[in-house]
Image 1 (cartoon, helix red, strand yellow):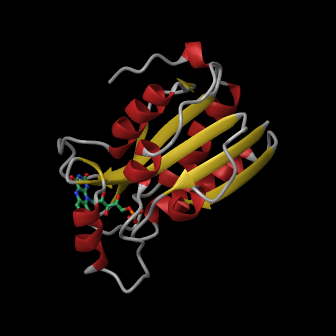
Image 2: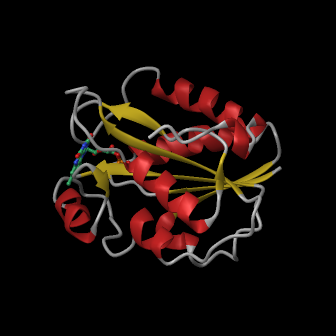
Length: 175
Ligand SMILES: Cc1cc2nc3c(=O)[nH]c(=O)nc-3n(C[C@H](O)[C@H](O)[C@H](O)COP(=O)(O)O)c2cc1C
């Protein structure tokens, strides 16, 4: 299996989940991890599995406005212009049989807070023609900027192992 994990991350939490997913997937084949602002530079994904994840901002995928807000909360160098939303909105449809999965991060408390970047990403992947090999998954952070809640790295690895075995028909999108 040849897999690519594309992620967006402001404070490093989604990046850590992306690397945990890649590490678990690497038991099944070759995996590359690509930050979203670099993803467009990679050739059209002739990959066996595309895994895409970003942080939940304002109940969904981040936008220029919310990334600008995030930039005020960290010294890290944040790409403002391109996130998962823009990258997928500019992507071309894929051939039938292409496989993908979506994940995201969001705050754990309050637990009822609606919205999920994972769900928005899954919707866009399906629109492009991907078959989803798993339902979109949210991983939780503590507070606005993290760190990840305890156990989330391990949960990401377990989720990733399921992706390696999943077929598009085995995972109807429940959201
Ligand atoms: C501008 C902004 C808006 C946010 N809105 C939400 C939200 O609507 N729901 C939520 O659960 N978390 C929200 N968060 C928290 C992010 O989901 C959290 O910062 C992210 O998961 C951390 O991932 P990262 O370190 O990869 O950026 C928001 C964070 C920022 C900076």
